Length: 176
Image 1 (cartoon, rainbow, N blue to C red):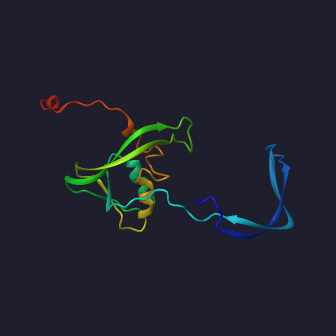
Image 2 (image 1 turned 90 degrees about the vertical axis):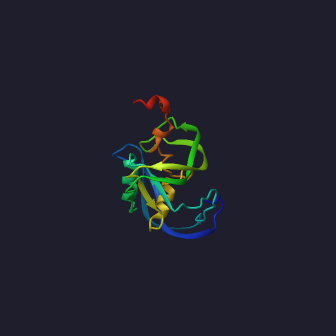
């Protein structure tokens, strides 16, 4: 949001006073019947700091069930690939990953840098396809674009992608 107000609101209310609470022992607010009027600055204009060109769809591996459920809770319709597909896609690469030390809202938020590249990838049948030609498309953008302020990746829903994994070379796995 802008740091300068773009309008003023004439507020009509009642004066308040602080009083010690008999329940908590702390202060509590009591509203009086004495009218109160004030002109309050309104900050309701956003300044765009980052934008993206929305994709046609997001492909989400089926193992991210919690993410898929949350997207559905927001009214997003999710389809599934009925057969494996090799597709040219834009992918995200993360670097400089750092978790917040103290939890916030029950999670450990993570910060990172993001870069993109185009790659050919194989997707198995069952991969979730979230198309953006639906009413709640903006919800999907805010949840799935990693640089969005409330991205699921920043809230720790994809933490496993940041963990180092052991792997085997193709020539070793061939005999297995």
